[in-house]
Image (tube, rainbow, N blue to C red; front, top):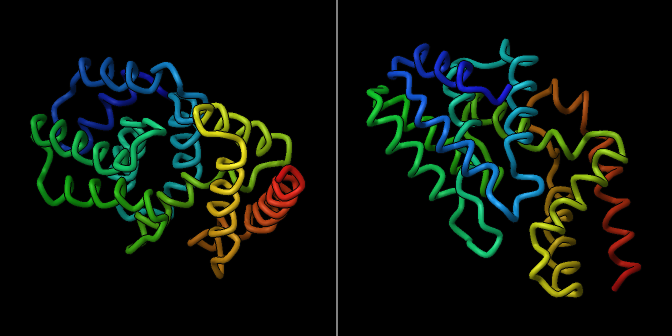
Length: 206
């Protein structure tokens, strides 16, 4: 999924010029040391999910480009990763000749991954794809959760447990975790079980 050919094809379909050097840049960013979940594998899984649900999108090519860029900048010590990733997408796609209105929508979708609040059908699908990991089988969710801990290895244990609990609880507190009916039917119940189980485990560790 995470291939130069796929990115070039998507850029062409968007009206932008192909750019092998952009793929090389993104690949280097997603393979930076210190990444254990926010990697090229995560992008590949998101692209696979988009392929499965593209019929739900108004502009699937824009969602795909948002996926390619959405975690390009990722440093667990920073609070502006989404803003920096969106800025990179805007700069790169502008230089390649993509339409400004399309770039604006892509930028908006990337920024929405910070709050996980979406406006519009495509943004809702993008966020559901990004959060699909929450509704995977328990063992897959556990591997994801361990990878996140490794990305925050610099945070003391008690501080991490409190912060992580707050993040996971914020998803449970939402009326629904997923925006689209398809994702709710497929993943909502399992996601809630995973989150509740992990929160209980962390409470026992405090």
